Length: 38
Length: 240
Image 1 (tube, helix red, strand yellow):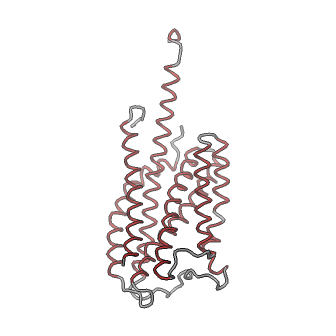
Image 2: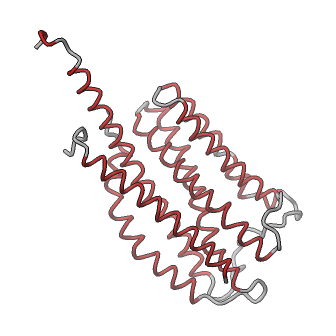
Image 3: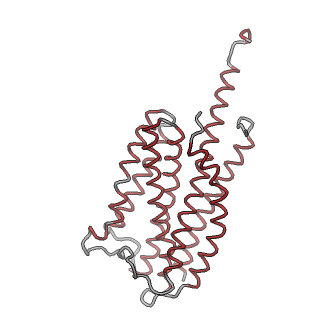
């Protein structure tokens, strides 16, 4: 069971972290005065 | 800066793919938990429901890299170059997850982490080819020549995908890796979590790709505005 939890935890964790990182970078750029929001 | 097709498409796809993922992922996990335990391998067989979807997402990502590269060469629209590079980044991530979950399953069922089997070796090669694509782009950023070379490299790299898929047949019975699934090779109650897993993996890929393309377009726009602002600030004061 430990192997299964490790595999699922790895996949879900890595994909969630990547998604959060992309969302964070997008938020930073949106806040940046040089980005046109129009 | 061009705001071409893939940028617009990505902006529109972020929300629907996000909602689809929020619905599909819990449903898929529920089906995985309620799927019957394999009589031969036991519970470790459930790694199939996450390992194969990651492999399908990898194939889709590298196909997108090749298509984006081909469209860049045809139209010379940098939006397609950003699309190709974004797909390669997401594909390398999914390929890394295939390479990570495979050995976990192998350790539990074969008793060892790795074997230099044709399928495993070609998966590692696929990962290294597209990792090199990303490194190449990061070392020689921004030029049209880099984009042209990356497009050709991304198209050529796609040749490994069918080889990887057919590796078990090509090995002619010497492969330790399980065969590709045939009709009826999944037991009762295993088809739904498997195919829903594949669908969820592809939707997760589409969502991350849309987010990555959107981010690349925003970065490009910010850089273009900064450059324009810098050029204006650098003008001689008496010119105004």
